[in-house]
Image (cartoon, rainbow, N blue to C red; front, side):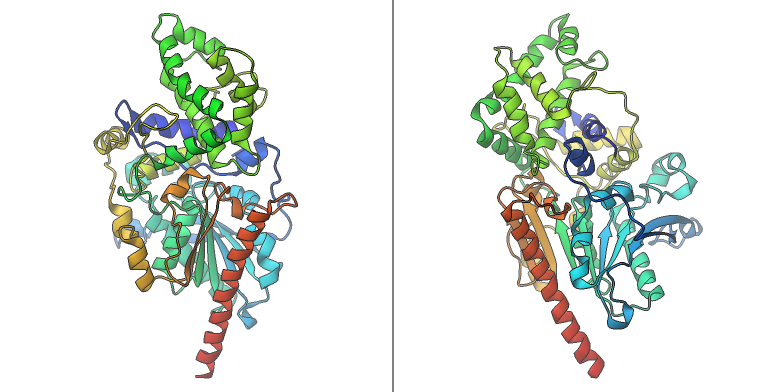
Length: 492
């Protein structure tokens, strides 16, 4: 992603396909690269000569034996050998599991592997998720997304099987059969990391799942929790900002109800194209508040938005809201509905949310947003109209678990870190309490979405450094235990 505008478009598209007057299947999971770029925050250094790119001939369908299942595509992955101690000493392998974006995004934003591989003498691997970036079946993006028959191979179980094949192949090629693997992922990638540890424990010693909302399925988490956290963040930052945003929706609706209202709103918000409805504007504003809260740190985006609202001296509520739009996006020629084609991330994640990744996120009565509860039937019908396929809202919990999560995982799970910043609205669906001695929850009061995996900086607050150090100590403990067990096994 090259700009925050595209990420906001990403959110708006999700809103538009999954919200009707009575439903909300509302939010995709935006990534951090564009937010960091837009707000001039440190990304990782430019791609270095230490990165080696490979393509693995991947099976299209791992779970069937029909002739068409044996079709293949080229799946991209990158290896950094710089710090690795080698297979002869069973040095560890850190693997970043790609999610709903091209591999370049992880290479820029996921700094945890590069920042810490040297202390573990670890090999670094980044694997791209099928259907994203250059890992596209059927020869091209257009062909891969042509219809539901072809998009049907885009799902989490197939992705995990892809990762299993590539990891096994890397270990075999490098003669590293006893090198322990730690899988690491952010957001949806964090869910994949935790699920990979559960499904493929023979391949992954442990998992670091950052901001992974594994419990935001099947009504395990209250539907309105996501927007309640956003509201709490804004209200704690500024009561007047919170009240202004809360009042603004009815003002927008009042303008839109007039014959000339949409034209006035288009002028007030300097839209790139004339507004077709009030919802078009409101979805975009909602996206700004969501992203500001989700990625608040380290740029203090909520503070920036609220400062613009509070410091604009006028009684015109919409002028205050427009000031927030400018503060968030910077000085642009126009706002709200820029001309952007649908990106690969948007296309792919729309399908994933309309098939298996059904997060029942809605808006309750006590937030700064207009109420819009999640309605499963409406959501299902919207997806059927779009793809001709109904979602499976209970599949994630059936396949990976979720109900009675703590009780069940303490019986058979191990070696997973669930990290969350409590200012991140997706933390509502995260694991926030320790499950066992080896399944640990690491939380920070002021943390935001996947912040612990971002590249470290001299300006990092002490609590963020402490969070990362806790995660590293846990990983070190896994490795120490593993090597002791391996030594005993080899002697026996």
